[in-house]
Figure 1 (cartoon, rainbow, N blue to C red):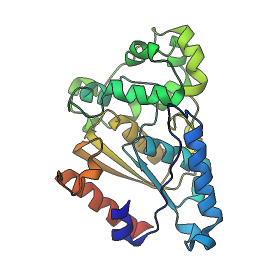
Figure 2 (cartoon, helix red, strand yellow):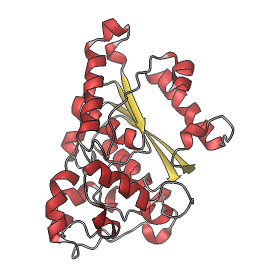
Figure 3 (cartoon, one colour):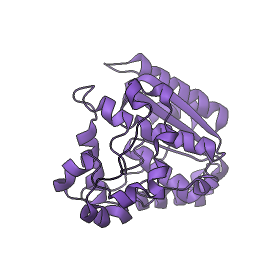
Amino acid sequence: MRELAKRVGIVVVSVEYRQSPEHPHPIPYEDCLKVTKYVLNNAGKLKIDAKRVAISGDSAGGHLTAAIAFRLKKNIKIQIPIYPCLQLFDLQTPSYIENKTFIPGMLNDVSMLCYWLNYGNISYDHIPLFLTNQHTSPELKKSKYAEFVSPKWYMTEHIRTESLRNMKKPTDVGSEELSKSIEKTITDPYFSPLMVGQEGLQDLPLTYVLTAGYDVLREDGLIYYSRLRAAGVPVHLAHYQEGFHGMIFFFSGPIPFNVGKKAMDDLVVFLKNKL
């Protein structure tokens, strides 16, 4: 945040929102929405331009960014979800499969799922069913919600494994009981921002989606980009094939990475030109 404030010349408001598991959805979302509305409604007091407000966050913050943008639409000038987690419908996307054990100690399928379950106030007892996509019933797998994360939205050029580029999703398995108990949560667009139809995406603000090749969340961000582009939203993709979850924080310091520096430099240029 300090780096962006210094290099772009902007005012940064950091939201200390309440976090799960103590405070599950919708509390973090509501905290962020309240602060964003306050900033927009008190621009004069804060000495900022209400017409030039951007929102951003990484990972869970990227999820909240997309949820707030869906709620406030073009009251926001720019949204910047950085390797965001955007859906709990399908945990067998190519990126979950390719990257679940690729970088030991980094975000993997189990740790990401635990974050989701904490946020949704869902028991860890269901972890095996979620990891194998048996948390959704056959009926739900054939619903409109499945279309929102369908392989038709994949950007196959960013999938390393050729056999995963044309995936066929089974629709004949899944726990009816678990699916029924969680359906309302996982299809809530403020919980899962990809659970929005194309019409609901049309009025979103200018969007900068940042994704990383070695990240279980890669497909979440790339699907979001593909769907926004199809909906006519002005959207820019910053994809780093050699990137990893958390990379943007490694732009300097004791363990810098070239990909982290490039991601930060690119974001600075974008904000200088567009904000």
